[in-house]
Image (tube, rainbow, N blue to C red):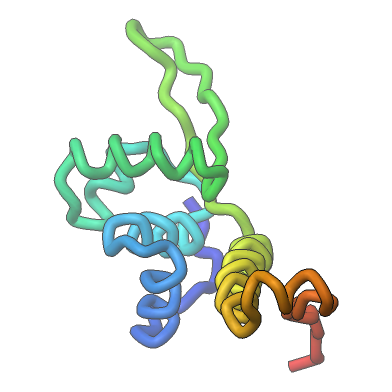
Length: 134
């Protein structure tokens, strides 16, 4: 297991928690970013979350495409486990910015009455992606 070079930073963890709207999701996401692929038991151990919480949260995060998984082939009896990975932080931020845009546009639409909206072009708020060298 490799460390992806992601250091623990409380402000980053708090931002991820705000984006993912869940303490368990944010802990799992940050753990997966740091480890670059782990099985469920390692996530349970590393996040100190209850096993059922981890399994349920992983399932929901997979459905929401916040993480992806790959089946591991092993020679032991029983099911082959999944190796879990986090989506990139940039992908996560793009999704979050789209959610923010949608909420802001709904709020902006309240500025006009129904009659006024027919006569004016609606206000559209767009978050523009800009990448700077660090």
